[in-house]
Length: 277
Image (cartoon, rainbow, N blue to C red):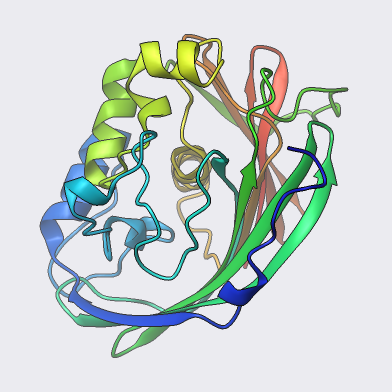
């Protein structure tokens, strides 16, 4: 498949709404995984990006595809035979969501387009989410890429130089870390925990590090290095896949009142982000 990809334009405008109580326990599990020092308590703020542990898929086992993704449940279209990748998100934080409060999430597909990148044609689907609590609102623009398997790692190509870091941290991902993150986010995508599937069926060199995990590691680094920094906007994009067993070098530097953040793996930038106050 190349430019013959069938763009599901009829999915644009689909929407859904859900509500959920922001329980403490899912956040505590994520904190343990990240070894993060956020003071989590009932009534306290939910850290930026951490609402990803809520509103998890409830797809029946029989509805999962061979890759572990849901097969057309919810508002996303069913696109069998295409790889699904999280290309990035853009957040706006207005106030603070609080632990223990009732949250309302509204989601809508706003775009479905055919694009072309370094590894060929792909379908870009953009969603807009809003999560609202009593004293806060989080807006997220989420970009998902659907592409035919190419037999090579996505994003392969010339590397863009990384700046010098003001602060950095090394993390050595392993199958246990990836499995735990898949569990805490109820992500059944097999490329993150099933090495035979990832290498033989998908053609990857090893297990793939989750894009959202990389985003949370960048936010966590900023918290460790600049604990007083307040974040009003955060955006991240995936540049290429990161694979086990290569260590992740997570770096950041001040850029005026903002911070540029990135992750380097096997000598290449895999994710970049910007946090603004």
